[in-house]
Image 1: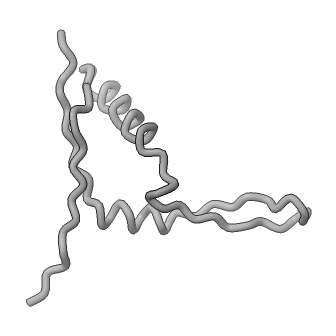
Image 2: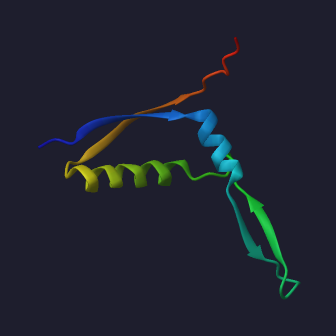
Amino acid sequence: MEPLRTVMFVDGRNFKYNLQAFRFQFPEEDKESKYRDFLLDEKHFLWQEFFSGVIQKFNKATNYEHRLVRVYWCNAEKMRP
């Protein structure tokens, strides 16, 4: 059976917001017990690895092989009355 052609839609506003909210700490080299906070943003994010991981999870969850064809990044504007 051929792989299923798969398209993903990403809610860009929420993805970017959650990515920026993610923080991790790394010990500083010159200080023994001090940690430095790091933030992630889209220019430092490993997109290829991320989407490959998502496809692998799809494969496992559905018992079908998926092939990522395209990713659509959607940014919805806030609605005002």
